[in-house]
Image 1 (cartoon, rainbow, N blue to C red):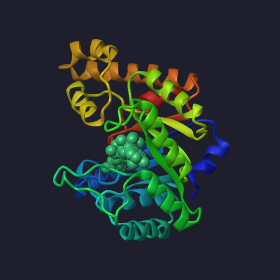
Image 2 (cartoon, protein in one colour; image 1 turned 135 degrees about the vertical axis):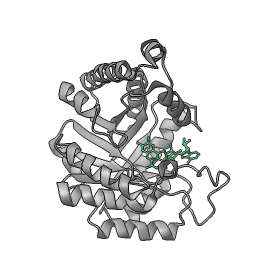
Image 3 (cartoon, rainbow, N blue to C red; image 1 turned 90 degrees about the horizontal axis):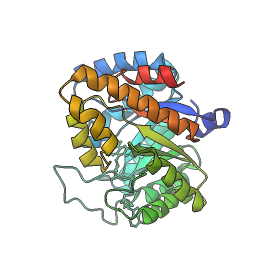
Length: 289
Ligand SMILES: Cc1cc2nc3c(=O)[nH]c(=O)nc-3n(C[C@H](O)[C@H](O)[C@H](O)COP(=O)(O)OP(=O)(O)OC[C@H]3O[C@@H](n4cnc5c(N)ncnc54)[C@H](O)[C@@H]3O)c2cc1C
């Protein structure tokens, strides 16, 4: 299976999806059926999160292997270094490699809700940039490495200029490309890319897209992720917050506009946070591709 950087060589723009590993066997079976449908949309790669929101860490690689082996689509395994020692990370990377997976999204992650006081010691990587450097040095180019980017600045680093420097450190430590946190004001993305280019970062910065399907849940999710609920979003979705069908339709129309503007403005593709569902990503893609 290809490294994602190799896919970039042949494609100006990539379309990709993000999934998360379900906690139950039933959820896992449902996800395999969802992947079956998502595969028909011919994404360039599909990623699977690792331990996000207390998710099932052990299943990430099973999902990624399934994507690659059954559907012949490049898989991107997220890997967070919180709660793992450097030795454990080495073993996990070895396991990822032995399963034929060549792409990781190298993340620091957050201390879990049930262990909020966890702090890295000498045995742990402190930042994603250290994980990038370790992966590059120890696995000698086997992996394509993606990292997370934050167009509005990371929650713990509201100084956007400084946050952009930390992003550059991840690229300088061996990362190949960036996938961003979701956002709803495209100028946040374009300004972010400009900040990075001014620092000499030439890597692709793929915008993360979250289609709005449920406004009250979105507000909570934005609070957790540090994404601004823009005035435009409030104007569109507040009046129809109780109407599921109207929200879904407005969410599709908003995402289509957002994606078109991003692609026209030079974004090198789109990464959809599918939340383990086919719709509405299928409808949005059908309009913009
Ligand atoms: C595309 C995407 C996918 C994600 N997938 C997952 C997932 O699968 N599982 C999961 O648990 N979470 C996931 N997350 C969330 C992510 O783990 C959190 O946002 C986390 O808080 C930051 O991770 P990071 O890799 O960006 O950390 P880092 O790049 O290490 O940055 C963490 C913080 O430290 C600061 N910083 C970086 N370097 C330095 C330095 N040298 N000195 C001082 N400060 C520094 C940064 O500005 C930031 O505030 C994802 C986020 C995105 C955008």
